[in-house]
Amino acid sequence: MALSFLARDRTIAAPGYSRWLIPPAALCIHLCIGQAYAFSVFNLPLSKLIGITQSAPDDWKLTDLGWIFSIAIVVLGLSAALFGRWVEEGGPRRAMFTAALCWSGGFLISAVGVYVHTLWLIYLGYGVLGGIGLGLGYISPVSTLIKWFPDRPGMATGMAIMGFGGAAFIASPLSVWLMARFNTPTHVGVAEAWVCMGVIYLVFMMVGAFLVRVPAEDWVPEGYVAPVAPRRLITTNHVFVYEALKTPQFWLIWAVLCLNVSAGIGVLGQASAMSQEMFKGHVTAVAASGLVGLFSLFNMAGRFIWSSTSDYIGRKNTYFCFFALGAVLYALVPYSGALGSVALFVFCYAIIFSMYGGGFATVPAYLKDMFGTKYVGAIHGLLLTAWSTAGVVGPVLVNYIRQYNIDHGVPPAQAYNVTMYIMAGLLVAGFICNACIGAVHERHHMRDGADTRDEPAGQTAAVGAK
Amino acid sequence: MAQNNGLKLFLAWTFVGIPLAWGVVQTLLNAIRAFQ
Image (tube, rainbow over all chains, first blue to last red; front, side):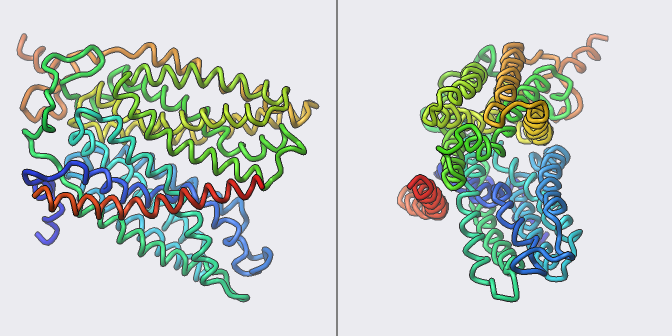
């Protein structure tokens, strides 16, 4: 077969292969697909393709353009959930290779869409095809990293997912620079910028796909002794991907992620406006954009720092920190406004955003602790539907509550207070969900050695008893 | 093998590290500029 080099058994590492080559392979993927966070830099240029300096009547509206990102994020969740098992069983190289083709193909189709001024081609290209690339790419390195770093799974997945958070730092200035290169008085350079980005991302992601290896079945890191007996919240068993859906632990972790992300994502999009309205005269629009950049750095750093910390204090305790500390900090934000203390506001938000990122990065290791390593990538794919849900719930909550307050005569500077208390309430709910998480019942575990995909141990034992 | 790994590690980390560091520096510079 021409594509046999993509097969899992062709990617098994030779003895002596350094496991520290896997995080850069994962970063090659996440640093590309995380561009999605910077897509908004194209919105304004896309709305002036005909009018060039200002929108013409036939130009696309910003409301129509907003759907491109929304479709991509929804397809991310769906494809991660649908193709998770395919990713897990086919190995990381096949998944990364396919993700690279989808992601860069999405850019190229969208460039054609810009060239012929057909919006549905962009929905199809960046939204659907790119969204599939996002979903496959996001989960493709997760279980490989966990298998290479059984001693520090949080740190390993944190490094990759940090790349997703940091990708916007690269994509945003790169997009602006490329558009400026191809911009003329009669032409907006979006199509050419997308062709360049599609090619750059294809090359970058292919490097990751060819660098990645899976460890041999009996491989363990030097000096590492696997725990013989399972600790209460770290299993040594495995749970089949669809069996995980039948456990309360999956849905509790789903709620934990959804609530943590809802609280963060809700204020992420509003941070600029919120800082300007709460500190009128002190924080200008330019300063607010600088603040947002600063918060994004904390979002990225938190992904690595919190997930690495979770290797020492445990996943459950890490989420307890997010929820307890987060609730206190959200409740402090209105107080910072009342005091007029920009420093307190920035401090609260910096920590909140670090924990928002930390929530994403710590969850793969939490799943590994609960469900084992065999299908952790696929289970992580299913869990990403929590992200899609939070992406709708969070911003809607913040926007509608703010609007409701303003419609009822609350001054803009105080309009966010109720929202902050509701966000703190979400985190308290998350704290309770996290507290309810216990070890997975052994009836959900797979049988030793056998390929028991749809048949957990409990059912087999029951059949045997009969 | 160890020497070969060392070179590979250097190249792989440089390949991902340079763009990431460039992006972080750009963001920091923008943030500093915004406050000036």
